[in-house]
Length: 626
Image (tube, rainbow, N blue to C red; front, side, top):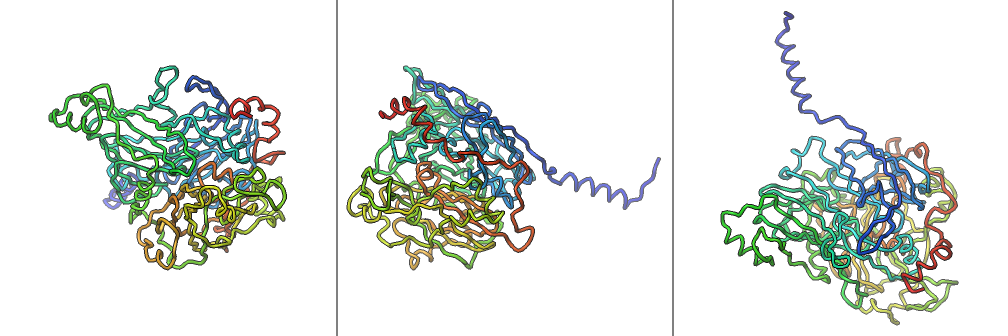
């Protein structure tokens, strides 16, 4: 028998134990996304929808922090396609960000392209979606990043199950047609229903037969991590489960200090990780998503509530049955806890914007998870107003206030974004120092004039807002040196609308320092900044007729989209480009484009207008009356 020295045995044991503690090696997670069209039937009508792998929502991508991802996109749809990996920082990898004509030429029909990126330094729930106007309503799915050391390393109690909850909308019209209408400000767009995980729920029916709703089975005493995503085009939602509370533990793949609430407001583009404990009386409970909207004088849309059901898999009677039954009835249920009628939660009013304001204002970062401190010194300050305006259909002069001579647009500092028309992507032009970049217009530090930005009298058309309507149209961009600390104040306005604005910055996270209602006043509001543990987000909800102050560091070279995640604001021009220059070293500079990068075709931004004028004339007339 071979003999071994004691030191050798100890060394072997130490090595064995150390390898037991090591996390799994980083992997390459591969998916194939086949983008195609299929008919789906809801509300007594078949609708042709564009989906990935025949699914709505599309497939979830599940990875471990540190992994690399390769997604092979095969475009069998009639549309030009790009996929954006919402919230993935894409460090030194702007080429994979998926914005048509900005970071890449789109994937043309009958073409394919492989996106490759890594998820180092991020944990939590993100998502992916098409960045083709309006098609993200059906082209989307979850992107889940788990800790490298496994679920036991979550900074909260380890859940028994993890479930994606994707809130969306069901449209019974061609989504490319919706985009065309938006760009021509024919603003008669409304979805037909709201959805949870692709299901409409029993508030909708076809000839009296209820639509299927999403069902979540829970076991008493178990803890569930719901990964909630708002993939809707047009609405912030209030999300609630009757008889249960949520503990919010992360948002935008950044951990937050645990925050207990019975309702989660979630805007388009946002993700929320929430814990739910199955501690109610066994029975059935409605899970409800309610879209909110601004009150009049804003135009009012139908309230498209959707609901699924939470049901306990163990329906035994609780020991304190009478108390549970009493509590059940107080919460709006009919019958006993195990009866057929689920408990219905009491929802906020559809016009209630303060629930969202206070919810977002109560979020703070979990101290130990904040990897970088808030920049104490600021190199550049920007003040950006968000609102509506108008441009003339022809020439420089025209009538405003709803006249057919002008088109209503969405604005940032009185500019509306004009997509580039070059035959290559802007990122390629930037990398190769092409003259195409000379056509960009600089985003100003502040709006051209100061006025009472939140004056409600500006919402309806009239002489007061008509003086402020005229808007410039340009491919709007702002250059930043590498490593600059930027403070940006988003100011919501009452210019022809009073919507909130979920502002999403690609390639970076933002420290959310403060928010407020009314007009931002630096002399007053800087003192309120949270520089200790502000939440870190990629999508910031700017409250209705209010403001948000953020800081971020430009440490990721490339061209990054910054835009409102309401689709009508995006299509109508509430967008700018943030160009981050290369740093001084190889490791701080953008590498060359990947192999087989998509080449541009004759039309890369939209389905041509002529397509609608010729081949969709009857459909346009049927849906919109002309």
